[in-house]
Length: 318
Image (cartoon, rainbow, N blue to C red):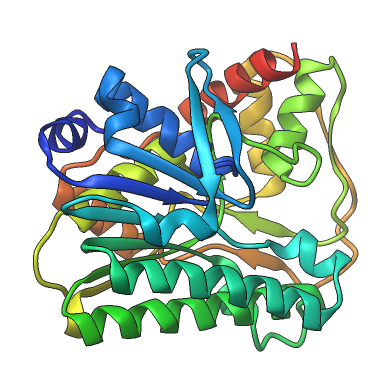
């Protein structure tokens, strides 16, 4: 659930919440959190948009219509909070030509930006990525650099909108998250470790180098996002607030041990470290922790994150 004070703020608010990219992991998790806050008012207070019209099904069984993203500028509302989760991610950059990948994401961003300019958007959240820090990293893969550069472009685009319009943009660089609706279980280390335990396998950490990650729960992240969107004014010019996700930085062997200990099963096997160049994908944890404290949001400990993620994975694969 969202932080109780944040859930009350949303329930008592007048804003219509529009979710661009509602069918992805973060979009579905956010929709689930909003259902818990709003109950039967969900479909009156929230609208969902994505690549095509379809029906989104939540864990409760509630079905929510998703409209094509191109319908977003047609939304009728007196005040809007806009959540921008719509983006083709790194795996698509690996599968598409650079020209096609750029064209698709530019079109998505143009549609959302058009909506921000034409609708009564009071605040907008841009779900950026830690990949933005890899845009010029020579050690990053070409797909990671391309994805990161396009995320940087998106950040700049919506920061400029906030500065020009005098409205509010919250830009969060998301590094590593946990929680319900997690997808691509084989692509995310923590989900892979949980899968090993759920299937009675040894947890294997195969990376030939040290790999450092830090995790936050989606419910914690979105509590902070909504708290920041609700503020008036900004910490920098034009009403732009930026942050990285934080969490405790751990090497993957320690993450695997935490999974094994939390779920009460499984042993851990760590491949030898033969590459001296570490892989570190973490944000500014100190600033993130300060923001949580300022907004009265309790950080979700890693063992709780693991348990909640595992519960969802059991339900969805069971």
